[in-house]
Image (cartoon, rainbow, N blue to C red; front, top):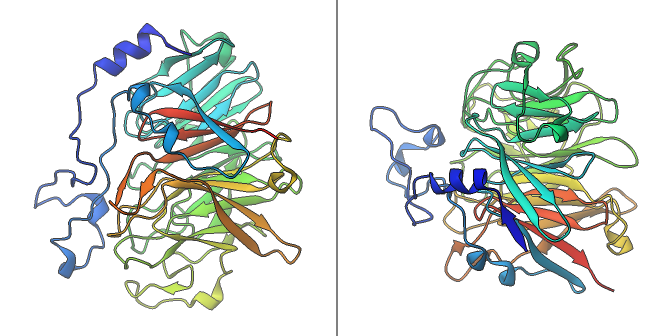
Length: 406
């Protein structure tokens, strides 16, 4: 059973209806090509490949494809919440409120579970791509493109948030391309924030872009933790070792199968992961005076070409079978820059005794390989106190709850 507050319902009804075609190219003038077309070779100027238009209206629950979801034996999925267009990252407040960030729609949602229903409301709106959320000491940090905000005592102020402006302290770059964020507090109490590159493929200021940084919660003491990271919008800290693991998006327009999206372990502060010269062993021909791939650490796992990993999350519950304890789940939003779709699923990765990863699909059914269409786009992951795993679906504005029954 679900309930949507009047605020959330009214805001959803006020949105314009988008074109129904999933793969229609966004409009762009000839004089000003869109950012996603940067790096497209001249011979592909007429290519129909383009990002999938986001769905910004609420999807009725009967149209949300829960029945199509495929899970391993013993697992079940249910529709836990809906009416959250653009839902991405999820974080949990100390009193149980689930805050949900978005990109294009510019909202942060609040979801309250009353036991009998989930109440969905628009917590904040009118922000620029507020996809980065983190909770600490009862406060909510919001990374909205180049802005950083903090809402103190957040669960006592759901109806009237008064954000503290921290943008100047954190000094984020204002370039929009790959400027959206995923943020998280590390075991060291510092706030980790990535800086994507302002292009698809280019040379850039390595002190400003392709970084993962960390800061004190007030925005002081900036440190560069990782370099050469093109666009990480998913990372997590291992629940036992505290080490930072992050996914990374390879560039577009280099071929259907190059480069692969990747998973990396940060082994030393300031380590360089190869961009723009190298990604997943792919020596990029677009960059002159290239440094060799052998100069950089190899990825710890290849995730597949153009799968677009977003949610990157260690399962910390005990309700799943033992083989899933501390396993790494990754939500792949799905491809646009290849004719045959890839991703649109959730995968799980495990390490063996030698440190090698195996990867298998955990939640499928949203990609139809026969028709080359998709019915959902997984984005965020969150372990709940009871051990259930929440998965947000950006395309349907929904949250699925996955449980295991022995």
